[in-house]
Amino acid sequence: MDALTGLIGARAPTAHRPLLGITVLVVEDSRYASEAMRLMCLRSGARIRRADSLQTARRHLAVYRPTVVLVDVGLPDGSGLALIEALAQATPRIEVILGISGETTAEEDVHAAGADGFIAKPIDNLSAFQHAILTHLPADRQPPGPRLINDEVIRPDSVAYHDDLNHIAQVLRDEDQDNIDYVTQFLGGVARSANDEDLDRAVRDLVAQKSKGGNLKPGVAALSEMVQTRIAAAGPL
Image (tube, rainbow, N blue to C red):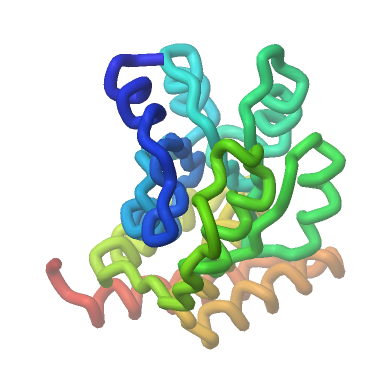
């Protein structure tokens, strides 16, 4: 534990800042989702660090010990479930381990890997975010008295969404069929977080086509075109 983490850890939570005194490691490759969680942590009083891959997360965890780890199921260098399982079995154990995904079907796998809970994307409601963490913290980490319920919806700016689109556009240009699961998981979560219903529908259509064993090239091409259209519409940021 570094000196700053120890100093923050000594501060008690309050009704206004119920996560004061804890540190959160967010393992998430989406800039949009990460920015939403960063803003919610700041509103709640928590300190946050971010890792965008399993490799980066393991480097963070080798240096310092967070109170809470939020792990996306789909990461560019492997499954977040492997990290959840490793953290759940480690001694001493991280106090709270939560899995996150844009697919609610991942919840069962997240719990089976040993996580304490699951958060479905989009993660944008401040009160729900706080509750998902506080539910699993011990009594000495809870704010005193009634907690103020803040149902504020957190929306990151468009720069983070633009960054995510550019990232997945590069992955799609590689035309690697082995990346389809990652593309649909990543882009589906981003689309739902940004309330982009047309893009979400296109992702789901591609997932359905893959499950049927059909030709994926038309669906991938259509998805790529939609991503490029949104990048062009945003213009330089």
